[in-house]
Figure (cartoon, helix red, strand yellow):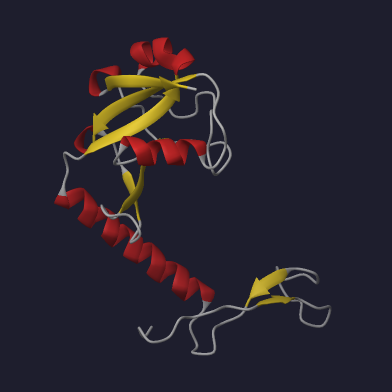
Length: 170
């Protein structure tokens, strides 16, 4: 891939005469870019780049504070169990989220939690540190000053690794 070209992959509909194997008529597929790159090549490159960025961000500041908002009615549960992936969903941009998500500032965590929706009731802010999270996945963003969009983990974060910061209400 060259830096002066941005690959694009057109979507085409498989017709009756084009089907073979698992490609049945009516299925939409992506075709290679005019430069010869395939969608799979682009996906593999993007995944490799994300893995490198994840490792770099984790190495730069392993003890970075991270924040998570939760409804205040979950406070007792969080004090007993910590943050547990797969518990009742409050909000998420991706529907049911099997991970616990964090941001690098309270305000950004709030923005990610609400994702453009209104909020009701009281919400608690919880803090932890990046090095206490098991298998963190750092989603990078060049648009954020820190370079971090969000940090996710599919593992439980124990109560001993959380600090209750405060609450906010409508």
